[in-house]
Length: 497
Ligand SMILES: NC(=O)C1=CN([C@@H]2O[C@H](COP(=O)(O)OP(=O)(O)OC[C@H]3O[C@@H](n4cnc5c(N)ncnc54)[C@H](O)[C@@H]3O)[C@@H](O)[C@H]2O)[C@@H](O)CC1
Ligand SMILES: Nc1ncnc2c1ncn2[C@@H]1O[C@H](COP(=O)(O)OP(=O)(O)O)[C@@H](O)[C@H]1O
Ligand SMILES: [K+]
Image 1 (cartoon, rainbow, N blue to C red):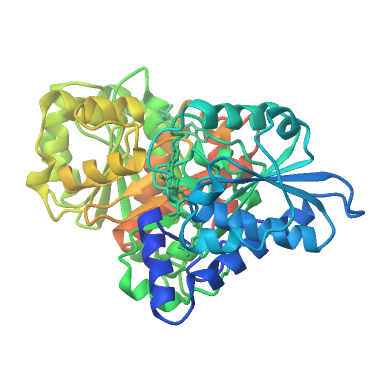
Image 2: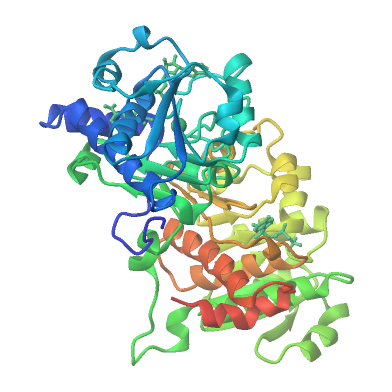
């Protein structure tokens, strides 16, 4: 079982560097490194027993690396041997070169230590991967890569200690090659690499990543600048708006969606309906005269207005109750769209820029940072991101989203399997709840509408956008396999927390 996302602070993610700070804090406040390692290794052994036949049959091999991850491995091997399992250690480096806590923990190991044997690894029942964890600092190559490949090709069930070896805890990327684990045991908190993809899959999937308490007090967090979060209820539940008995629709905001011309008329309809479903009080779709009658006929719950120029748009926006704008879905790419967006931005409402708006802005190189201090959300998928930020590499998506947020002073929603929300102040959330079948035409339009519908309710920006991304993923799960974008609309209502 993974961590319960409703637990307070379960959303905190610590990078490997921050985790070192937490370990150090614990050691300076009375818990020795040996004690932490003893608890870490014991918890690994406990999880291992759940992965083995209960009659004690089967063989376990513990692959031990040159650092403290290897130290955890020696402790786990000792407990498993004590509990009657057939366990051996296969070190991947010279045992005499072990240092510090790992050297101390290797000493009491009196069980079988065997030389590297790839065939034995392939046919073991369980392999415990204690090669590298937080200390991975370069790509895996050569003999160690061959060990990893043998484990991945073999039939053994694999338990990773802290992180699958070869996986970066900071980025979720594979460095050279990585262990494909069935289960992982990590300490104190998840790391970003467990939630980001592909790291989440290498770690065994979110339900198979155990977070265990090794006695580090939460007080350490006061000294660590936590700024990365798992996008779950514990992050935003305090910020979600629950209408009270006397609440009125005007308390819940009014979203204006800018619609365009054929052939993408459905996109803006999806966004305007998604906004309503997400709890805003009113939703209006403004569209050019030529598409007015089509949109007005298609929509019952959304008000439809016409505008043919920026001036026309401004007269609609003279209604100050309109507090959130969505521009992009079906709007068309070009100078006219850029002009419309600039007119909207000057009105200083909360604004979601998606799809065609992003492509248009990328072509015109508008300085979004000129609108600094305004609540603007950009929702690029990878293609749009590359056009908007050609100088930012997407190899490390978390850093990329953060960099773009800083550069534009906007909130960036970098869409994908693990959608990232990054704020200009450095905070970022990573979602893990979107099912693969959410990737359908129009799903992005629905997301833009959900974000606007939540933002219209006036709650804090970063938490609101993170919540909206979660709600979108949850709606995909509720709508189920085979969904089309419009199926998400009724599913939003069923997914509201
Ligand atoms: N006292 C502590 O600090 C605790 C540490 N813990 C464990 O310690 C781990 C971190 O320990 P370390 O900092 O020693 O780091 P690791 O044990 O993850 O690895 C560091 C060692 O691996 C080598 N290395 C890194 N990348 C390599 C590559 N690509 N190819 C070959 N060699 C490579 C480094 O040169 C170094 O010798 C955590 O992941 C966790 O499992 C836990 O026991 C809890 C307490
Ligand atoms: N493999 C995947 N698993 C889960 N969600 C995904 C996956 N691929 C894409 N998504 C999500 O699907 C949505 C697609 O949005 P987008 O690319 O804008 O599509 P469109 O423009 O057709 O509406 C985004 O919310 C994205 O995060
Ligand atoms: K490991």
